[in-house]
Length: 409
Image (cartoon, rainbow, N blue to C red; front, top):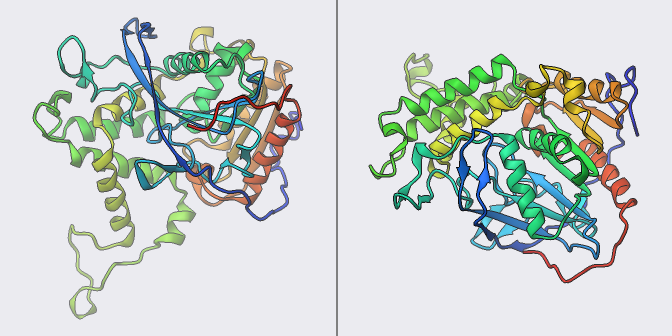
């Protein structure tokens, strides 16, 4: 369905339906080496690099059923299934992608790509720089969303995919999907943008800066060369994650989960005023922060949050979003969540209004969900039914369903 400007403020009613579908099973990461230099928006180049990817499903005869899933800040190419390297590692969007799931891998060939600069297998700051034989560290080139799109396009070229049935992502992944529709319009049939924004607000940039300062001022950061010191700025990373995590949840969700519950009463039942962990919400945030600091790279965090800050499709059109989106030829689906205050519904509506002014096809759904920004990752039957219906619509347009021998990686 396509909205009109007077319809899009109303949430779309979606009938509840029981969750269905099964896992894609055990999946293995593929590493694709690229020797052709990647030109970057900064003017720098990445001369040689490797990208980690996973695929699910089977590419049809004319390669028309491919769907690209773009990942958010702390996610990766491991979108669905169980990692062959770790049976406890379930794909970050496993509830969305798989046989019989909203993005049905019995119909679509789904690709997850780990972006350059990340720390989950693709070339990034922790990788060895050929010129020095040491990790790149803080010298790794500055990256933008548009740079990631160019890298993803090279993956598509390598797999023989000229045009995606859909490019899809949530949050920072939604920015990448939007950039695909603008910079490679002929290669995108449907653009699915979830819980995202056309640009960060000043408040969002401020949150990112606080997180970055926590990392940079950690004594173990060593100017980004902490690899040589055999250490990690864990305290800074932990605080950065805590700050970010607060913004991913709604006030109501945090109140329901934690309220003002204290972990244990002080001796004699009296209040104890101090600086230890006393409230359940403190315990939760510290756990999330410490866990994050054990697996995420600090330089990667700095790079990706800067890419978030820089993203603005209208930068090259003097702030004119209509001109910025004019090249897009895709059909758009935009989804927002009522309690998402990090990327609120107003930002998605801004994109929809611009598309409608341009006469471009746009479907918009605003889901009344209590979970804040993280809602795009969770099991909400209305949300999943909407996605299922939209991808059924895409499936009906596929030119071919004849499979070729391209099995899941």
